[in-house]
Length: 427
Length: 76
Image (cartoon, rainbow over all chains, first blue to last red; front, top):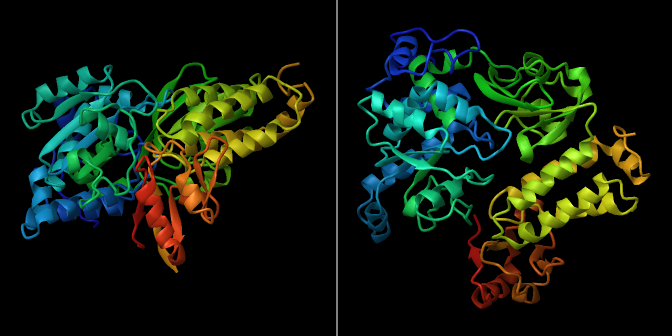
């Protein structure tokens, strides 16, 4: 596990890894990282990714190696199974599919777009390595219109990616949800669908593209994979704190001088990243961690690392690396009500509890934010937030519920003020 | 003794409520008429644990759901 696969160049030192090349060209990419390992053992690569501790960077933080392993196992089963009619049907459906997901529907996230512009070759390397590992017969990059030109330019610069197909993702909040990605590429709308089986698996209830084992990985995850394949798990883990490994991209927005994307050491304190973005943590009221489906961390707790362990008490997680700063002059309830209203509007309206519950939830939260002096409002917000949990075919109701419940907890003192017609922020 | 799990496909369900009549021990209705698991963790609200004694009722709910939104999955 500690042996590197093949390196002709030393891995970048420090926390500038994904952005280590001098520009986005293939020449700069090769000069900085060396060529992509061409001849490697799939099992060894999966073991290396496992050893690296790489967690998916799309939001859910699922261990990258496990998805690779599941898709690889399903692929091997299809290749070898010719006996049963079910296996033959699957084989006929086609080989495995790998999709690089750069849809980034979350309005506060800019990291995938930034990465595809600055280091498209790392993403393509990771995609091709993942495709080779699972013996994929179809390979896609799914991303927004803004990012397609950089990807297409990069594909044109190299000879090994001509088969990679580009697919434009619509700019909606849910377009990057894994089942929505598969739906869209399959010719449907970019909305989530009901699923029982994991999409990487095969069997009677396969959820992947046209019944094929389908691996959907975030573009940043793939870029890290490209580096792990070159420099190994030990190199990857040489930085990272508080149980997190490697680096991660962080999008900082909200009450900051200007929104920025950083590459930081994974598990670095929130305050370090905020300072780097030009904000003094003490001058903030709170930070929304994890985006619109995330949770608030109050200003007194911003020295905590951006790690699963340290953020768990707040219901937050590193997720896709999103920090939205809320200045002291801004009301947390108003900000949350705005977000809840947006999220209610972004429901795909396929599932009753979400289609009905989210607008109601947003409405009651808005009344609380507007300082309507109705004593039952907070309890009703909480009831509705708990009512929608776990009752949808995707996690949109769960994420919305998380944000709203976190609002009630972190801004509890202000909730009491609002019920008196006052506000901690507005006079 | 679990008899499997009842999976609700929320994209198909439109809250007709037949399942809640056949399985009142497991399912209540929310204010919009959609099934709401009475017991169990919030992450078991789309895959509702069915005790063996209720398997027959669960099968009937699956068969009679006008939207074909239910599936009975074997115990894992």
